[in-house]
Image 1 (tube, rainbow, N blue to C red):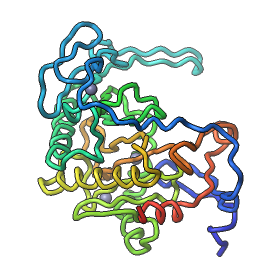
Image 2: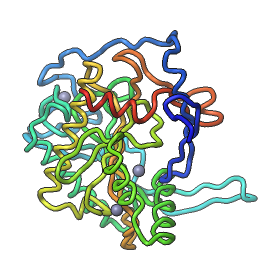
Image 3: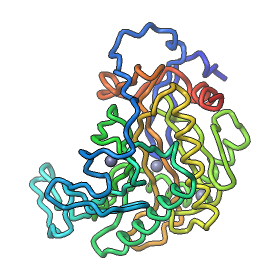
Length: 338
Ligand SMILES: [Zn+2]
Ligand SMILES: [Zn+2]
Ligand SMILES: [Zn+2]
C-alpha cells in the first residue's frame, strides 16, 4: 500500500461522495499569504451596543427581554419567510426556480456577552442542547418545514457579525444540498448493506483510534478520514439516533459536554478563541422515519498553522477539488495533544 503520510493521494467522503486531494509532502512549504489580526481580545460581559444582550434594542425597534438563560427570537433579517406561497418556474429545463418558505430564528446561548461554548458552564450548555431539541421539534411540526438546520458561525474570520454566543436556525421547505447528498448516501448504504453508514464508520474509527480526538459516554469527536478543513472534526453519537429528538437525558448532557470539550481543545490549539462554522446534521422533518440518518455535528474551522494563518478554498479548490496538506491523522494527533 502507498504511504499516506508522504504520497499525494485522494480520499473519498462516503457521506457526500466527493473527493479531497491530500498532499502531505507539502507541509514544509513556506507561507507567504494573508496574516490575520488576532482579535481575541477580552470582551465585556455586557455590551450596551450589542443587539443580542438582554434588555437591548434590536434593529427594527424590538427590545430583548431581560433574559437569564437561553433566548430564542425570530431573525430580524430572515433569509426565509413562512408566508411565501409555494410556486415553481421552469423554462426549457435551463431556468428553474422554486419559491422557498421557511422560518429563521436566533438562539442566544447565554445572557453573558463574552462567553463561548468552551467557557460556558455545563448546565448552561445543557440548556442550549434542550433548546435545540425544542426548536427542532417545534419547527419540524410546521407543515411547510421539512428541514431544520441548526448552525453557529463563530468568529469574525467566519463572518460572524457579533461575538455574543449565539447560533442560528434556518428551517425550510426543501431539503438543502449538503443534507440531500448525505441522505442519499446513507439511504443507499442502508439498502445495500442493511446497516448504518456512520455506525459502521464509528466502529472502524474506534478500532483504528488514530483519528479520534475525544469522547465521552455518548459522543465521539474525530477528524474524519476525508476532512477538507485542516482541523475539521465530526461529532458522532455512539448510539444510533436519527435526530436530537431521540437523545436520552444523559445523552443531551453528553452532547453539551462533548461540544464544550471539542471547542476548548480548539481554543488551546492556537491559544485563541477558535473560529469555526458548526452545524447539526440530522433527519429531515418531512414525514418518513429516516432510520438511515445518523445524527452528527460538523465543525469546519479555517485556521491552518496558527491563530493568524488560515486556509482558503480558492483556485484549484473552487475549480476542481478541495485540497489539504496535513493529513487527517496528523491533525487528530495535534488536537489530542492539546
Ligand atoms: Zn451581547
Ligand atoms: Zn447509525
Ligand atoms: Zn453531515
